[in-house]
Length: 157
Image (cartoon, rainbow, N blue to C red; front, side, top):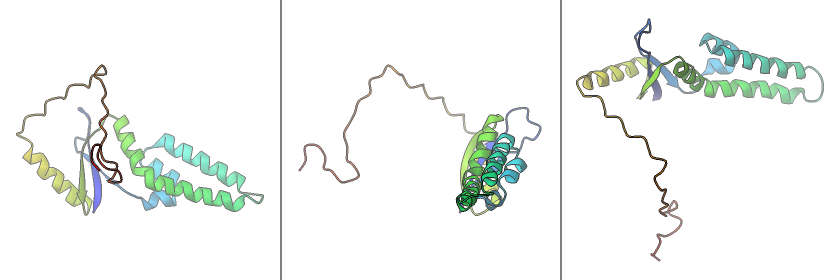
């Protein structure tokens, strides 16, 4: 099962449909990180990744550090493969999209169905009341508790 994160577009967007993003490793981002980032319109990240890969390959030309720098380019691909979906989510948040749900599903079609079913169930429900902001003037109290079962409770042997 994969995890899909659902983003609703801001009001007045030309495409009112939600965006479903799979939160997991992406093989294409491992193979070609700058191209994958540019494909998903993450321009700054794509340029930064391209500049880093260009610098790594420039320093890899001569010298005994060549193999180490070759592994660095692979590590950059792994980083983009793992963190690429998070970069896409941050890009959507910057564009005004709001995160609505996280759904576990086998594929995107199932995630869309689950989201549509939940959306229909809560369509008649009143909106939740906003929570009050936490007060900074409230005292912070420390209550000792169990530490992963390694220590006993206070007052007990």
